[in-house]
Amino acid sequence: MDIRLISHDKKRFLPLLLEADEQESMIDRYLSRGELFVLFDEKENPQAVAVVTKEGEGVYELKNLAVAAPFRRRGLGRLMVRFLIGRFRGGGVMLVGTGDSPATLDFYKACGFRFSHVEKDFFVKNYDRPIFESGRMLRDMIYLRQELPA
Image (cartoon, rainbow, N blue to C red):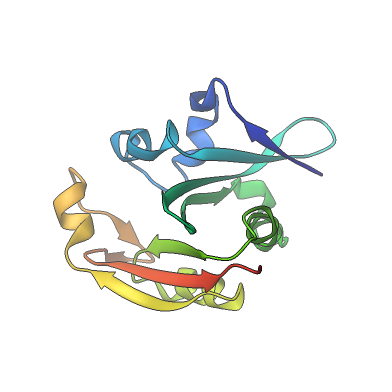
């Protein structure tokens, strides 16, 4: 497995990015200014993607993390998070915003993230249709944070 920073033609990974954020216009808001990382297998197939943006001095946000359906539940999401924490080390904080889905929140908590804050009605205000996860309509964005090692 090989994780690479992709600088050009980022939209070629749109199908995988849409697995984590189902509205292309929302992805467009952060993809061009973010760093896109792609995990490839030995046959050059993309298995996972992540986009991280710099939100301020020492503040980074994991905007998108997706694992292709055939490769889920194999630890690739955790591997990507560990890679990103190491990549952005140097002090500061990594934020991640997600919906109020127990499975997703549990995943990030298992990766070392802790509750930070809530942005009320984020999904209602920013998406052109209702977003559902695990059978629940998402309203609020739940932000989690993890301190980055020095």
